[in-house]
Structure formats: C-alpha cells, structure tokens
Image (cartoon, rainbow, N blue to C red; front, side, top):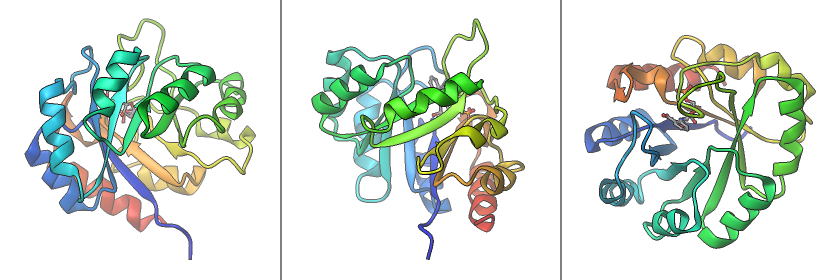
Length: 215
Ligand SMILES: O=C(O)c1ccccc1N[C@@H]1O[C@H](COP(=O)(O)O)[C@@H](O)[C@H]1O
C-alpha cells in the first residue's frame, strides 16, 4: 500500500485553529516565526503552541535565513521540524541541521528549469524538500503569497527525489495538484484563510477532505 499523503497546514497562530486542523486530520502544523509575515508567532506563543501540538501532530517552525541564535532559540522549544524558507545554501542547511538537532525541511522556490536543477544540491543535506512558488520580484516575503507555479516544470525533476508541494494550493485545486505532480505531501497557508493570517476552519476541513479523496 502507498504511504499516506502528508498534509501540512501552515501559518497557525491560535489554539482554536490548532485544534481545528488536528481534528480535520492534519499531519503537520506549521508555525511562522518571521516578523514580516501576517502569520508571525512571537517566541513565547510559539513555545505554547509547540507544547500543545506535542503528541498529537508534528510541529514545524518556519524560519527565513535564520542566524545561529534564532536556530538555537527555536530548537530549544522542541519542534519536530524546522522549515528553512529563505536563500539558505546547501552548506548553510547542513550547518543548521547539525546545530538544531531537529529534522530540517528545506523550501525551494520554483519558477524556471534552472530552479528545478538546484533541487539536487539539497537532497543530501535536508530531511525533506518542499517545492514552493518563486515569489515575484519585490515581494516582502519569500512565501505564503498564495501563488502557484507551473507544475509541468517538475517533469524535469529526478523522479527518485521525494518532495512536498506548496504554493497557491486551495480546496479547489489540491486534488488536481496531487494527481498532476504526485507529491508525497502537500502544504497550504493562504488557501485555507478568509483573510491574510486568518485561518478558516471550514476551508481547512475542505482542503484535507479533497486532498485525501484524491489519493
Ligand atoms: O506564510 C508566510 O507568510 C510565509 C512567509 C515567509 C516564508 C514562508 C511563508 N509561508 C510558506 O509559504 C508556503 C506557501 O504558502 P501559500 O499556501 O502559497 O500561502 C507554505 O510553505 C507556507 O508555510
């Protein structure tokens, strides 16, 4: 039997939405720790949310090009994963993985064939690869913009490389994305919100229902 699809709901900020995502069947919850994000969670609340998630669902803290002290501060809270969503090089990902002592998911922006070619350099240094849309020039953050990318670019990806998919996924397009791209996991933020940073329980439920029905 094929492994079950991993579903990550990202950008959770409250206990109510954490509970809603767990009840709806999420496998991973993402917490943003990046001040420019409308989903930013300060460190004290991050500690509480990670504790609340423990034993129920995997937790993942999203950082953007963090320095060593930020990595250490977040790793000390005991998340299952740290997601690196900035311009970290393979060497830096490797160093953060060694420093943090938690599993590392590396997000890579995809907007061209050259971007797809970069993926191979991260396979050995990260525990998981997440392929996301490349943000437009001038964007104030590197993700969480609700933008999808041309999934056909992934036809050039080495088929032995397992990856999760994100970028503009919604309850309406998630089934098509899964059938087209065959990721082992999916990740959503904007597509389950009623406004930037405001998660919607019904959209989370619809997203997970539609994703599970597609495999
Ligand atoms: O959500 C954000 O604000 C964010 C900020 C900086 C880096 C990553 C961010 N979000 C991540 O982007 C992808 C896709 O999000 P969306 O579904 O297209 O809104 C996802 O991994 C989020 O965790």
